[in-house]
Image (cartoon, rainbow, N blue to C red; front, side, top):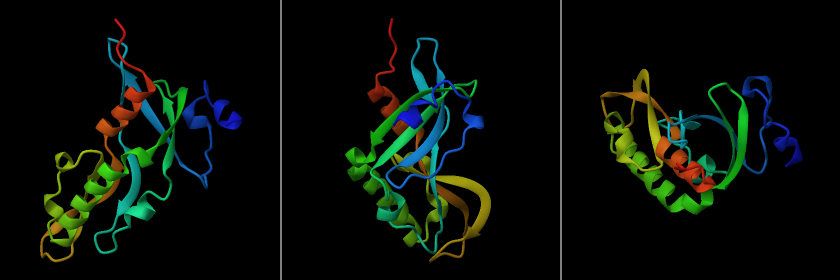
Length: 162
């Protein structure tokens, strides 16, 4: 962990991160509300979603933990957090099945961010064919949603302190 701890205080754009064989590594930005509470300012991209060859849940979450490199609006790394995704695999799996079932039913064009809790299917601009339907659907990416990232931040203890 020493090499990762040396990242604190550095600009996120000036570092190179190698893929780990033990966990996901994701630099993520956050902002701070007036009360001092941190909130994620973006989602966390996991993988492209190919409607005709859907990645398995096991492959999507090939690691049970994620190292989040939190950085502020000035792109300065302020915190590192290892979070065990496995704590939430039941909920993430339910979200995954919902998305997969919609695609299998030819309803990929009807997937909405509000349909799931933690894992989302981010809509992109490009329209592509989908299985079991003549309708085109927006291309998608699997993402960890902002409310899930907020849950992680809250568990780190960065809450409003009055």
